[in-house]
Length: 344
Image 1 (cartoon, one colour):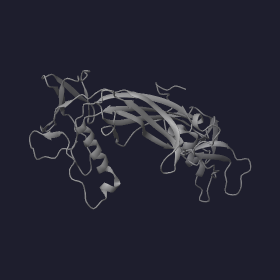
Image 2 (tube, rainbow, N blue to C red; image 1 turned 120 degrees about the horizontal axis):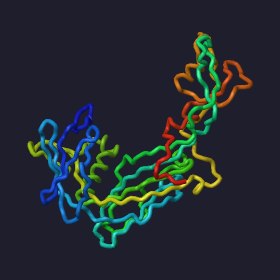
Image 3 (cartoon, one colour; image 1 turned 90 degrees about the vertical axis):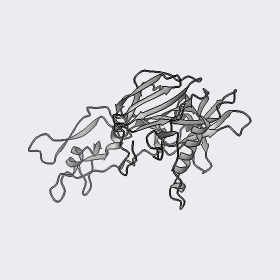
Image 4 (cartoon, helix red, strand yellow; image 1 turned 135 degrees about the vertical axis):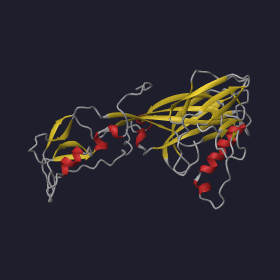
């Protein structure tokens, strides 16, 4: 995509291919705006080099420097531990152990996808609807709930650059490297949590690019008086050698591992983390002093969920107790479909 003040806007209808050093071409096609996938499956070989070639819709051409596949090194173990970190925060840390006896890996980058179960704390089998009778005014009805919105699942992806290197160590061993820390008060670990971690073995050049990008992206760098210069990657214009192009074509081996844990595994008989919402119960009036339908409007705007009847309404209270929708409907935060990989 081009650099724009309103951007980024994806590059549409580009010609994208990867060229092997023997001339073999692997073509890519656009599957959604700005995203290109190979038309045929292929795998890179360690004894060959590869170049990315791009021709944009308006005819501009770019290419990367040749890159080779890195050493493949497996994740030995991905494991969770309850700790108090250096900032005095208690929580869960997800650590990686990895070892390359050949000593050729050295430079590692990690990405993760975390998936967690959400249970709506105020879910109930009944809900409220506006009375369908055209003469009903502001009245609402308690009805059986049509959908089960009590248990959901959400998947989030890592959004930071996670790097480590073993170049200064006696052996090429990653030991107890913290990929993710989760504070014990984070509701995402309240029930069951899973994380899939991918380990990329990178070249020294790729590692340096990502390390510089990470450092440039820090708040201290962004707001310091001395702004960083342009971050040069390994992609350049074939038409205008002075054109600034930001990007990196990386050919890296990748391995992955997934684990699950329950909150009760590490915090047995302890109070759950606070939910995403305080879930304060209220009893909105049916009609306000101006004649407006208060509760019915909240119901029809899908803002609340029914809890129970208000048996002893006080002043300025209605006949039903409700909570914010997120407290009784987990689909505000996730989806009810159980992920294919999920194991209880």
